[in-house]
Each structure stands twice: as structure tokens, then as C-alpha cells.
Amino acid sequence: MKTIGLLGGMSWESTVTYYRLLNQGIRERLGGLHSAKILMHSVDFAELEELMSSGKWQQAADVLSGAAANLEHAGAELLMICTNTMHKVADQVAAAVSIPLIHIADATGRRVADDGVGRVGLLGTRFTMEEPFYRSILEDRYQVSVLIPPEPQRRIVDEVIFKELCMGIIEPRSRDAYGRIVASMKEQGVEAVILGCTEISLLLKPEDTDLPLYDTTAIHAQRAVSEMLAR
Image (cartoon, rainbow, N blue to C red):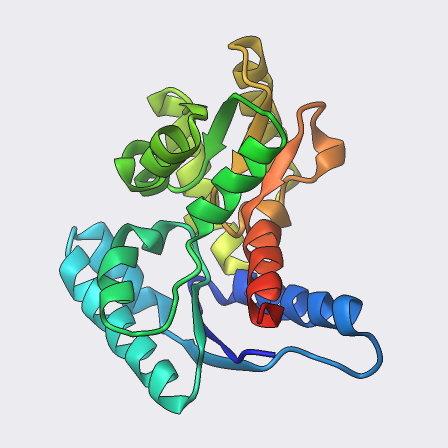
């Protein structure tokens, strides 16, 4: 089994889910008392969020790149960024290490394409929804058409993530709002919805909508388990 390095804390609410899913996945595959070999660097999310909000992406990339290099030096053989949004700087982080980085959009795109889904809705932070770093992988590499909500709905999705979910707050009214957004996407012909923020799966569950949901946290973790066990 390979040792995986996690860049976590963005937010720690979803990093807890990553830790659980990786250990559960290893136990399911190997049985007995087996658990995942994990190294973690958990950042202070407030510092990263300030850099993101002020557009200082290179400085954010420098923080994660330094952490990634430390994880490799400590013995990590694989690397994960435990958040969708910070994959905006995934190329810089990958360039800072010699170990493979498991990209969340690549893992998700492959799953969607394997399922034969051709048109999806994408929910996430405004960075993930509006900028091309995530959507381009789905569209160019996997030929999946991506629909994002209109601006007023994008603002709702983003505010719920940062003001509630990243704080561990789960509000039924926010679940209802997300449900209405998913319903409007269905009316526009999407076949499924990608939960393109690792916190959204804490709020929106499969039973909350009649469209299939792609939980990127779970997909990312499943891909990592396979890579950890690959020879």
C-alpha cells in the first residue's frame, strides 16, 4: 500500500470526510484491521480564503506547494488536494513535487463519462463554477457538457458554502434552496449534478433530488484508494 499525503483543512469539515472515506475504502478492499497510510498537512483555512478572495492565487499556490513538498519529504507517495476550489492551483502544486497528484476533476470526469452522462450541472464555489480550470477538464478531456446556474443562484450556492457549510452549519432552508437550483437545472436538460465542492455533500443528499448526484469527495477518495493499492 502506498502512503498518501493530504492537503487538508479547506475546510476541515470535509477533510474529516476524506479521512473516513480513505480508511473505509482500504478496509473494504483489504479487510481485517487494515487502514490507510496517511500523512496530512492541514492549513489554516482563514489564511487561504483571504488569499483566494483577494485574487492572490500565486501566494495560495506557494502555501500549498510548500506543504506538498513537506509531505513528499515525510514519505508520501501520492498527493491529494482535499478541496475542489484549490485545484485552480493544482498545476503549480504538482510541479513542486515528484509524486503523482490525484486531480479531483479528472477523477470526477472519468466517472461521469464512464456512466455515459453527457450533460451535467455543476455546483461549487464561484471560482469553481465560473472559472475554466475545472469545467475545461470535464468538457475538453471527457466531452461532458457543463451547465452552471445563473449569477443570482451562483451567489446563493457560494454564500452557503462559505458562511454555513465550512462552519459546520447545516440549514434546512439552504438544502431547499439548493434543491430548487437543481430542479431548475433539470428543466434545462442536465442528466446529473456534480457537487463540485467537498462540503456540499454534507448538505445535499441523493434523497433530496430526483437527479443523480456526483459526490466529488467520495469519487476522489475512491480513486485514491485504487491508486494506493495499485502496483
